[in-house]
Length: 379
Image (tube, rainbow, N blue to C red; front, side):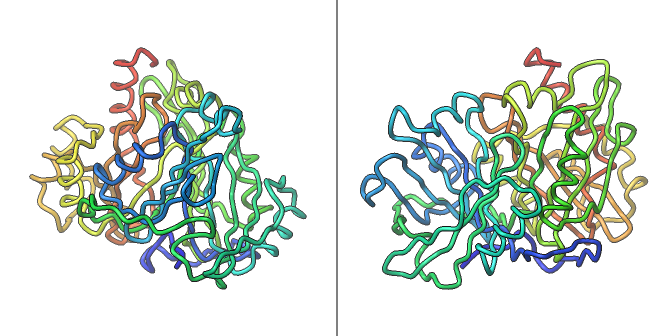
């Protein structure tokens, strides 16, 4: 069964979107990593993902190894090359560990490829059929910003564990889940003056609509700034904010990312929970490190956001941020980078009606990031 990237709470129809594909949800996210076995252990131990599927030498795949872990409606594929001349090595040399594939679940992968390429998408690979004893999957792919790609996955005639070529991965070590449910959104960092061209790509090629925008007045501190636009597909299940740098006194977090990732890529994945206090406590106990805002953030929090269901004490203790829009409020917290390069990180988010992305927290969040940048000597 494929995953969806949102619950009905977030599935708000976007009439401006053409939705000619259409997209049913996020199927999986694939990361190229230096050591897939160890990365799988990390995502299980630290974030509560569960063993799901495996492909490698034992399954007849000779050039790479992939471990699939799942939690809620999310699937992460962690892939490492096995041969010295594999193209994945170049991806790792340039970018370090990072997201390569954002796979989208569709009814018709051939149609999705035809619709997007005729509108200007560059092919990653043409439609192909993959089969095993459990049925067949049709896949196709298009290129995105940097080395990132979308793969369209049609699995209505497949009944196996994950995809052909994978076998179920049974493990004696399966820590409890951390309460993470689905991919709320995924954020791209692109280069100077590249945001609007990629907004146009998602509008023209993918049929998305621009549902929200932030400029350097919304997202800035004394030292740095960025601009962002949020793209959504028609059924509201898939949202891709796109960031670009803006002029500031010092180097922004987007510039730092672009320097260390050596180009555009996925900056962070937002993972939703129904109880952020419980989830964050669990993640902290497992060693996940989060950005911290000053305790003064909470001094007038209720004056800014109004009445909330949660007690302020645990929110302040854990550093959880709160913001409100016209439809409700949200709670969010951001990890530090998951690898030594200051690139990919995870956002933990709980929505209590809000459809926005925490605009009121941007300044506090970015100041927290700048403190980390200063410590790294990259501000």
